[in-house]
Length: 257
Image (cartoon, rainbow, N blue to C red; front, top):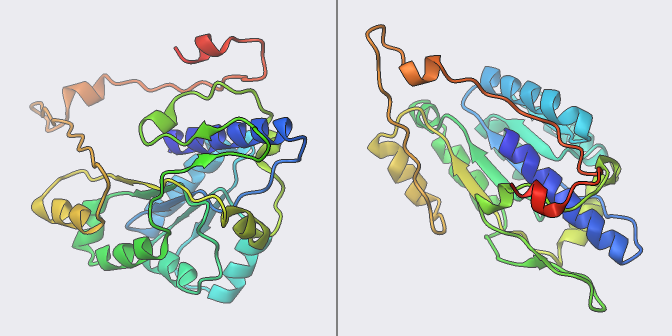
């Protein structure tokens, strides 16, 4: 989730710099990341994590799971567009199949617990959802009249620390997503797909191939089980995160290290 938040922050920083150069307010964007999980509990956990880490940064996250009236949920999403949409496969497919939610700004599709999705016969919903998103297109953010161009880099480069200073308030207000859709129509997005799985059986590899990934990279982590069945490396692993004030007088070179 942290790389997803950083990616959205980077995009907001680039958009704010572009808007400042053009002397225009930054345009609000639509949904930029979709996180698909196998169960309602996993979706709720991912949403809580995104809110806990990204809420203070101005990053909005919505949760879509279970039943409920699709039209009511659509109206809620259109009135208060989130940056991140977390949910279960069938629910998300029901929402996007209406074609009411703009997809031009979707930058990242995260498929979590892929082996569980396949075991629960949910992979077909994920595949259908992926087909509703625009095809990946390598473009750049550019304005008219000789304004600077900031190329959208593929993963993992897109997760590099942004070398631009921009207040988080510049994410844009909760304006209508229809406006964001009109703005995004002229700016295609280089969409990335990230698949996570505790196990990597052939079913997971076959499913990944059906997504027709562009230049896929496979990252495997060896599980070194100890006598109690747990991984010694995981027992001693400590993770930290830091909020960095990008508005302070820190050199871009220092931010990149």
